[in-house]
Length: 180
Image: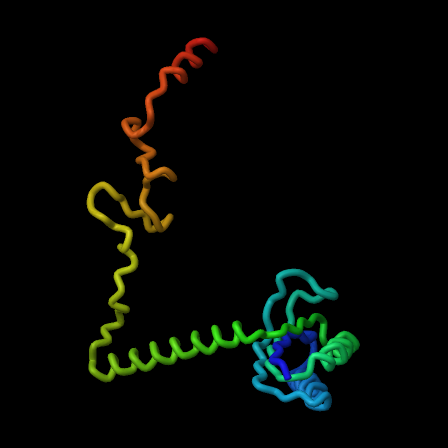
């Protein structure tokens, strides 16, 4: 059995009980095809990036499940025929992706544990103690710009505002004189 993730969008005009019925029907389709549900999340009503079947909103549902590869075609056919589902996508999650996700979850839980320990010791002052706003600040010759998130120097490390860092070229001046 392989791990899959299905994201489908339900017609937003349905009421909550009808949405739950659609979610239960999709889960039942997977279980009837010898699959098992790992996780089911209803994200709720969200705005679509573009209009789909004259809808600008949709109810997003993410479903992680285990199934045989041959049952995916049947599932996709059923999703296509279900009128209340306006769009769907089924993805295969390979082992590398699952390991990466598990590592990210482990790091998140470790960070939450450390944060809880700091709060219990009273070290948490509301600041993340990470002065990342000024990581690029390196003295007087680098001017930090919050808007751009980098120093004001140009792409080649030169200060765009001073001509002293630019290579002097008499050829450029000669061309200007000839065109006048």
